[in-house]
Image (cartoon, rainbow, N blue to C red):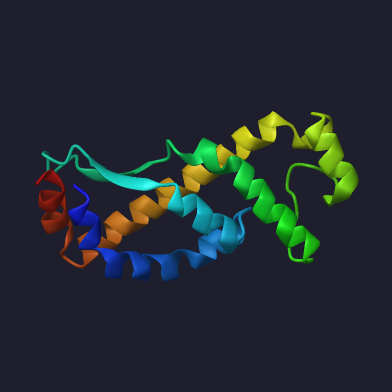
Length: 149
């Protein structure tokens, strides 16, 4: 099943470029998005049924990278390039980091769950866009069949 993804590398690059605007409008930086995509695998659900087959994002590994997303954001903040935090009123910094580590304020465990849900939503949008791209270029049927092999 891994070979099917090898056959669409160029298509993925095209969709990546087209999807950059959505990533830029999201709460994730391009570095964070890269990490999210590294932890995501794509599968074809109902591959044996041409009418129901669709690309879905397997985000099972996202919880494992959530701490690293925080590190990326922290490093960007230290360099002065972090995106604004959408859920906590503060701008980050040492005090907010300490509050978050103690479970106080807006940076507690719920923040990870919220970020994970947002990442899952965005990754599935990407999968939907990839499928639309493959369909519009006449490659979807070949990819769907290759997935089954």
